[in-house]
Image 1 (tube, one colour):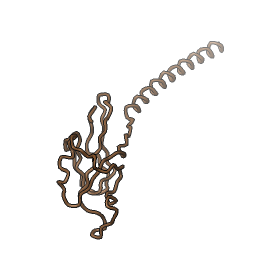
Image 2 (cartoon, rainbow, N blue to C red):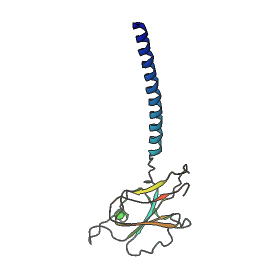
Image 3 (cartoon, rainbow, N blue to C red):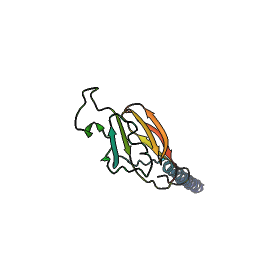
Length: 158
């Protein structure tokens, strides 16, 4: 009798081990899929911007948002960028250079699977920002040097 009792307990133990092994595999597989779905990849857009400034004329570069606009004479900069450095001097009135600045960047994104999105995240803009994407105004932000996310890119937009 003692032999049969030990054999029965051993079979129960194997069954419990199988159950937990299958449960663990299913759980880890589901957890991995959830983590995969939530992974966010950052793509830095900090380099290779074109920029220009004008002290008084906010219309000096009308049409700059169009892809056909030539910015070849603009300075190439990386952001964050402070356009006080353009003239190499400091203004006495209000301490820093005042006026208008334009920044342009061309970039391409890879198409993503359905349901995926791209977000434009800005770590800070001097005072005001009007955001254009593919020649369309897609946002505005007022609030100096604060972060903001204004829009997202759907698959394949450039």
